[in-house]
Amino acid sequence: MPQKKPASSLAHNKKARHYYELLEFTEAGLMLTGSEVKSIRAGKVSFNDAYVSFRPAGAFLLGLHIAPYANAGYAQHQPERERKLLLHAREIEILSAKVEQKGLALIPVNLHFSGGWIKVELAVGRGKKLHDQRQDLKDAAERRDLERELFRKF
Image 1: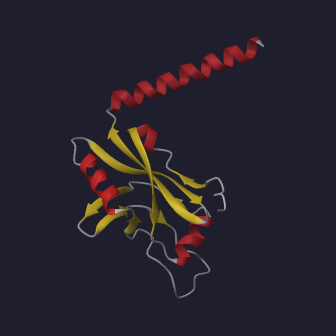
Image 2: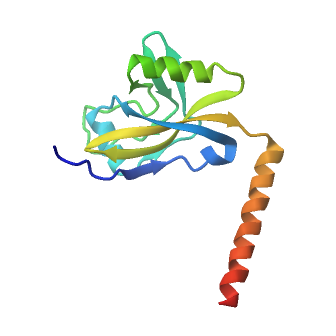
Image 3: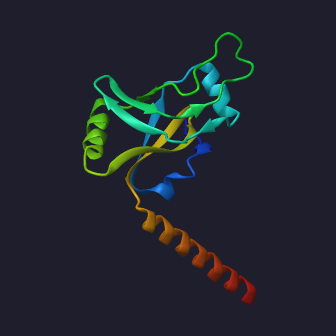
């Protein structure tokens, strides 16, 4: 049985940890067209306002912007179309039950390769208040200053 190669990251949602307290992570496949795959490989992805919505037909990723691929010709894709997530029915039930709780959302955190397939890492997150975001920025600045001081001493 061949071993899987380690996942290589294609795009990362930098604002997810700033706006949300991420509680639990899971991985899902994406239904993509060929021009979308080429565009993702080129790094033309934006996670602005991306989230997961649950419907009777399954789970869908909304708001993920994948720029049109320049060399696609007539087979272009819509940049912000809804993309179906490839999850088992039981996984969809569990995630939708968690999201129905007050204040929780399912947010895409990372796009990466996993064994030749493009996967999205999803996180169940709770929205942070403004004062929590400010406190996190203060803590990060203090940690940076402390590391600088320790580095200067050695």
